[in-house]
Length: 345
Image (cartoon, rainbow, N blue to C red; front, top):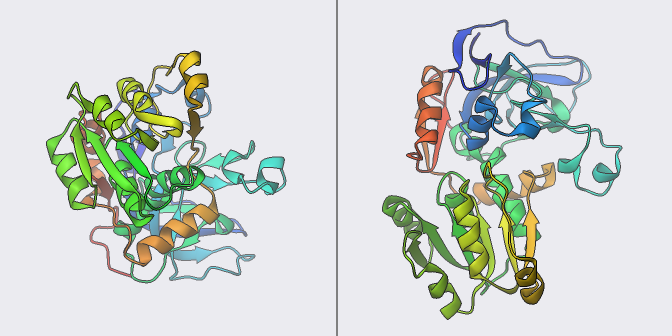
């Protein structure tokens, strides 16, 4: 099968033929119809997250926003069948037995396997996955529409869910890229008053078209003042990987509000403890999401409340797409289609 393979950090992926994976008795083999290109893929490829660089399997097939059809299943698989449309997320496998799994926080499982990091992912024509962690895609969603929800969608959904965003609250989304434009839609669906912040006028226009009440250019010196004049925000969700975005977002959160950590800068983020204490700002980080979170965001999408803005590219363009991410020129989500055009489900 064709695959884009990482051999060394900071080197282009190699497009080559590799043997297709063989599913075990509890696994399924999936023909990949769509695989979203996530900013995390870029960090993995460049090895600039030291904590992850140590666990990256090499050679590695990247990709953890996968959607396709089951073409083969193991002898012990009962709940999935050949022909089913399924997705494979970042969370490839969890043990089900540890303290975090038992508490409903399987995304924190210490024994977890990670798609496109510790096991091969979806920049390929086929991928295998545990049947227990391959989720069915609802009718009405194509693979291209569904794929980005398996990371970008579920991550921002869990962040807003944990912050308990509700009708009438003020939400600011910093960074209107692959994750941010989905967060805008989820916030609007929850009834929040959403403000988008970005350095791109094009991305701000996209946010407004998706329901954002306000759109602010991040380079404006009055961004923090604008938020303070409205009483601050109940939650500021940062999808940007820029440290400056966190500095700005922190100053916009109302007392008792949430700073939601989603985007992951290479540098540490730091805030004065006296301001944290005086304003009781709560920082809440999000590690992708659980299968329950995935089911909920897929249901929202199937109901027409969330749509990821996508553009498709062939697998052979994987390196070019990663470079576009480096340059910050991607709006919405670029999805690789290893098997060519994708039928609707």
